Length: 506
Image (cartoon, rainbow, N blue to C red; front, side):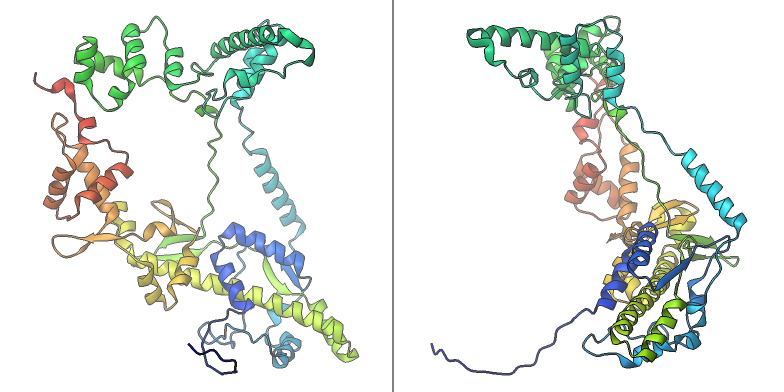
């Protein structure tokens, strides 16, 4: 092996993303609410940017674009950072003639419009959902009804605030005891026993509070706390909870019948009562408020048939470059103030980039959404079960962009249709080949699988192998492992767990 030192030259190609390209990709990926926040941040960082809040009428961004400017395909996306871009700066200094709408000073909304907007925001604040009552608040309020001494109350509160979101006490009572006083000396063991006894009494108090089952340390204890002597199958439920929860979960009713002596009908009736108990008594206090979804794309029906898309971006502020800073730039050029000139040039260029990036986002999202709608017309006409297999590469080829551009365009975006609001990614689904050679979407496979199981004979439910054969009768060819995968994903029990033992001949 020969080692040597020397110099050599080689040619290589590598892709370098300019800041302008990175910014365009970031803007494209943002949903409408995040884009509003991004614009607000740009307004804070760049004094050259100015805005007019939309007032009544939707402001169209394309009004700000020079009609003589090159199209999206003709625009050069990458800016040479090593060049001084003197031509660009000269164009910026004269842009008032080329793009007057971007530089014109604009008047804000009228007094009436301001008052109307204030009333609208006031109504929104008045209709905001109040913070729901927590499990701890609810339990502590009940605790005030009991006449307890200070030590007992303190232990109850300590237990309440150590419950998990489902109302279970996962911490051992020993961990909730207060620190042992130093002056106890030889009486530490007695002190510990007394404190533990108070903690157990406090736990008993908490477990008497509503909702029933709260403060339990296990599922069995939780269910047992909810039993009341007045229940029809009180004794049977005690036996089932204490010894046969796993057997019930796996539908092993004949085994329970053999061990307990209860007949199948009694076990099933007791099981129905057991299902009315709450395994997670504290879950109803969890904050289940779903965040509101703001659609980026809306679908309208065309008169001649078909659908057309539109973007709901009327709430976006209208951006333009401040004419005051343009005049400052001209004054700096005249005064040959290089430092001020370079600063304003940089800010104006950044402002122009963000304006063009927003317009490019609008154009790309519109084209991608329209291509998706054109492909999924059956979904919109006839329902989700008629969705067509679709890959992002198909949309990329149709629109004429890279597949990563499509991925960014649909990421975290929602579409409002007459069938509901769907994420744009919902329309991209894989599929399998049917008996006739046509592709069948996985969503249709799942729907067909659910229909077959719903209509099966529960005394002889279909195994996964049998489900494969039943799907084949419908022209859908899938493997057994695929059926098992989808069955579990749809939370459908196995054939043994679906079996109805009450109708089985003995």
